[in-house]
Amino acid sequence: MNDARFRGKCASDSPTKRWQKRFALVYLIVAIVFAACFATFALNPINNKVVERQSSNLTSTAQAEANALEYVDNAQEFTEEAAEGSDLRITLIAQDGTVIADSEVDPATLENHLGREEVDSALQGENGEAQRLSSTDDTSRLYVAVPATYQGERTALRLSEPSTVITTAADATRNTALIICGLGIIAFVAIALFTYRESKAPLKKFDQVRSDFVANASHELKTPVAGIRLLSEAIRDASDAGDEKSLHLFIDRLDNEAERLQRLVIDLLDLSRLEEQQNSDRTPRADLHSTLTTSYLAHKGEAEDKGIDLVLDDRSTPNDNCYTNMEPSDASLIFDNLIENAIMYTDEGSILVSLEPRSHETVISVKDTGIGIPQADQSRIFERFYRVNKARSREVGGTGLGLSLVRHAIERGNGSIEVNSTVGQGTEFTVHLPKSK
Image 1 (cartoon, rainbow, N blue to C red):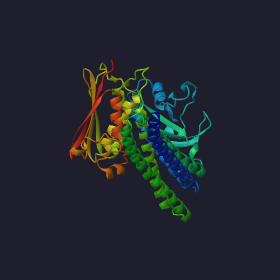
Image 2: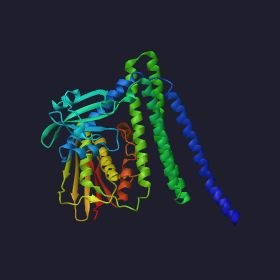
Image 3: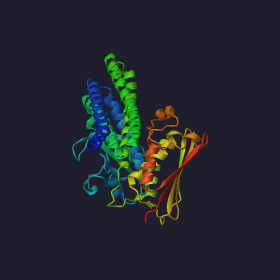
Image 4: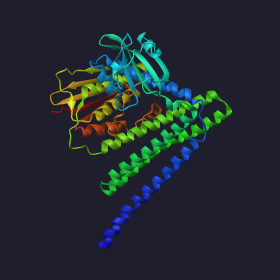
């Protein structure tokens, strides 16, 4: 009897251990070979491209924060909260050059900022940028400033971040290689964590779920990694030939593939986080009104770029309870994914985002005039890696995990989600979240 139990245990554990060792070994070998290939050539022309892209991203962030600033009463708290958890430094400057608020330094100790080119441009109604040494910490930083309005007065909102990472082509090459390899390792860890959790389920179900997940995740990771490797070879050849036009084209494609890999890794990490048991020692609380407004403002520019009218219909009042027992990061994940999906699959028309407080719950809906979802697919869209239109999803950069993440986050908050869609007319997702007491 003991022998039978021992043989049974060996039979069930041995394949799992063998699979884990083989997967880890193969993945690490691929990562090491890829890192070695990527680090063998220099991407000299990439420096200016990186600076340009960094400046563009920083400007977009500054404009989103400037939009939110109009609704803020305390500028100091706003700058500190907006910069929390990032390398950003945020400074609000009055028309006369006086610093109103700063996320890192007491504004009373800072000198007048007039005469700084990016600040002067913003105070004159234009976006400005500059790259120089910071007088505060003596590090090279990239600065952007945009026009803003605070308490009815014209101001300049300036964002800055360290730029030493792009001072030389060698640094850019090494850092890019490290980032991509790091993302791959993080993805491997996320898959391993998911596999470990699934091992607690009945063996038959676990084997099927694990097999499907690993196959899908491996396929999704393989595509951008293969693309990056091919592009790295193309960049090396173009660099050797002095073909600057092709070099810039390949660099842009390389950046797109790296961004796609980054999105997948972020989604895998979010999935791993949502699978964890919540800490029972505390009750999380999220302000749905504030979180939805932030998501709406963050995506408004992206929608306008596609010619889409993104509208927020917030039916709450200051007296309404719009709180729910949910991690704020989970609420942000829900709204960001639903709005991003609507923008991705709407070529023209409008997207209506609404919030309606009810007696015991808050109802949020995202309704678009996009391509719609076939009836046969609507029951499966919340599955991991499921795509209705695989070609379009990859074209717009989808990972196939967005709606699965949304479902997990809503379930953690004891809520529900419904979908109503007609092909060619659009889709509406409706989220019901119970109010916190």
